[in-house]
Image (cartoon, rainbow, N blue to C red; front, side, top):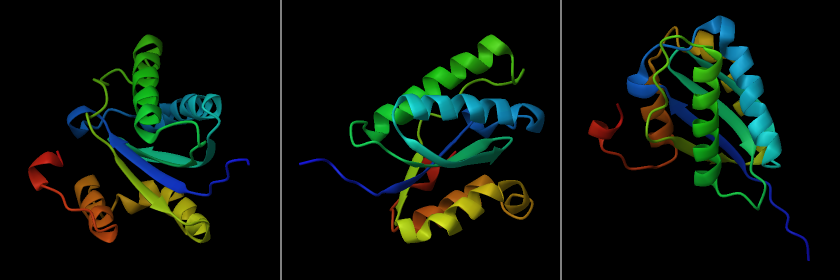
Length: 148
């Protein structure tokens, strides 16, 4: 029997200390690079976007890849690539943790639109406010001292 899955993930992680180091003019290059990482892991990317201090990835994970391994690979490879190519001059790496939230395929269009609209969204809400909303929406208990 073959393996069939249909789980959408929204993966979110920020820059080290949530420093605003990812300038808008070079983010598209970063997104293309991360897209390649996902493709190499046989994951389907639906959307990637972000602002100066964090990014959102909407993807389907291939059954052969563990979420933690994928995020680790994305962070390590992209951090190295950013530094080697001097994409963001003040970039000091990624935060230690990440958020990963699951969605049904019925929520895909809403989720993609939400991620596409990150720049506008963050004119009204901080990353911390957004992240706490997502944690609450998904029923995840958290300790606020670990959020920044």
